[in-house]
Image (cartoon, rainbow, N blue to C red; front, side):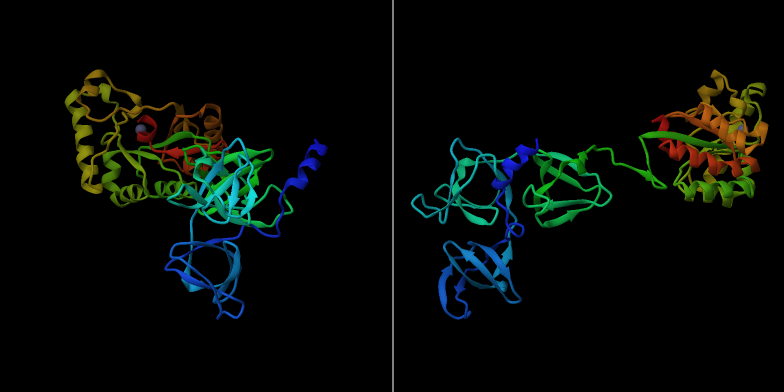
Length: 404
Ligand code: ZN
């Protein structure tokens, strides 16, 4: 393998810098001699020049066979399109769009070039490294690209050639989406914006449309849980929970009782303002299956109206106290009944450590986790729960996001 690399090394046409910039002469301009006074040739409108050296007001440029000076104000940067040379023979790069014109070089098939213009007689103006010239348009094909994303905290360096000793043209930041044209051993020829060149292939990875999310520096793994808090709002505990949720960028669902919403309307408003979801948990928490149906309906309806009067909208979910309901109750509801899949038993043990243990033992992707924002031990243990689940790559979403 080492021998292979050595053999190929001399073929790399190394230059001391990246490819020269190409600019368009907007309204036509003169190419001047070194004295900036003698006119060498007049460059027609919309023709292109290769910038050899940029100075304050003038640039040293190459135009066809001539080298001279053009005023910077007369030129503007041109965005090329990228094409691939495909030809049985190595096409000839010529000074002008004429098959008799002087030959600058030949170009290997499969070379990527920058294309600036097409002429009426079937030539294209292309740049290959430091050469600007014309080839037959028929040898140019549009390469297919694959979306990739930069995968290195330090970003990725772009070079004009597949050689680490070559200067860096620019560095593309981590997570930038780029277009990959082709792979060349350990190098990838890529394009992003007006930058094209080679990057080390191991520093880019497949692009997936699902945008990567991070929480407290941890990459989330497309796993979600819905945290639910019942029986509040509580005059102090709910706020403590809101604060912890905020730290972890967590959205949750609060199944409130009408009675407590009535008592602490300001706190209910804070819950909604923080982006959490509100569910109905009856007015004063009866076991609905043990009371007359009309009373059950009244428990639900009065709470709907009450919540609406505070936050401007009725709850979009319902959770029956003790999980107790029957088909008659279900039929009267216009919103889904939401149970849970992870019971932390926080009301029973009142122990922050057990809260975490129960979550660890049961939580998985899609879990709906039952807690209560009326127990101090729940508020105290919540941070460890969020820390643990975050490390596992979970995102915290509302019940509606899980259910839909
Ligand atoms: Zn409850």
